Length: 419
Ligand code: TTP
Ligand code: MG
Ligand code: MG
Image (cartoon, rainbow, N blue to C red; front, top):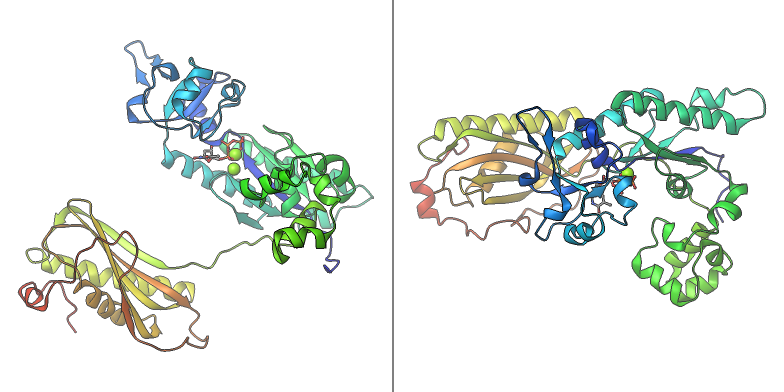
């Protein structure tokens, strides 16, 4: 059924207690202590006159916030992600509580991915703290001599982990197996700071004893149904015949359960994702008014259109759905978009389409932010989809502002396209 594809070595790398570990870099005195990330700005540590810091404690927390993540020292008390902070406070009252700093986590995310890419560039981004890496074609593995591929895989994985550590000061855990499904499971087997390399031969001993929920793709619902059928471990699932599973879970999911329990997964490591849209936006130094600041707004609008056109060209796309985004002084955001009869990458055409969208917005409030977005992207030479000009209201966050009546529009000539 599945083609006997060439054997691969795929790694899954996941940072350990990621947000909390980034905080420990900043506050090394907290190392080894139970620490929970999830507070508000009020829980920011205070620096005292003598230079020491005073931290908020979980026991003093009141509110409805949840744990974003916790250090392993805090997990030892049973604290985990998504637990209510007040519940966590009962388990670990002395744990330190810190507010989240997403900018710092994003920055560290970029840094650890860059450190991996220096050694192994075939990377699939799976979120802020995890990636898949295809190691198969790396010279370190292809040119290995002798008969011990496992030790070269292990050495290469260790080198990647060392590079991440050197670049960030953080530890990660890695699983390396013939596919993504198994590597995702394997990276958790020796957390934190662990490395688990598995071959297919080890499936019965290392994977089959695990609960079915360890398979990424068996969620709470399928897990409960399997449990009700008396299937607790991956091994028990692997005992089932495919037709029996298909009967109970449908053709595609049933077959997938069968394959997954046998450690089969041929999904490639996907190194780039096609963008859904390309956009540019700008927040003004001071809020601008559609009439009083018309010249400046018009200039910005034209520049945004040129930037979007340049981005489209550089990335090799044309767009058929142009839209605008406005945020007003009261932080209300509206979007409008417009589908063109044919895709375009032309700055003037984008400017025109965006101008038409703008006519459908009430511009009496002052504007904080202005953006242009190009969606429904296609390659310039691909056959154009069915041609039908249409306008529609976009995005559920769109404020329910009706299009300004034409009379009002003529009173507000705005920063319309110079045609
Ligand atoms: P995870 O990799 O799931 O968890 P972790 O890195 O904190 O711990 P582990 O050592 O078990 O990998 O998630 C990465 C980050 O994503 C985590 O540090 C915080 C954030 N996150 C949430 O914001 N909410 C959640 O429910 C989870 C699970 C994670
Ligand atoms: Mg993690
Ligand atoms: Mg993760």
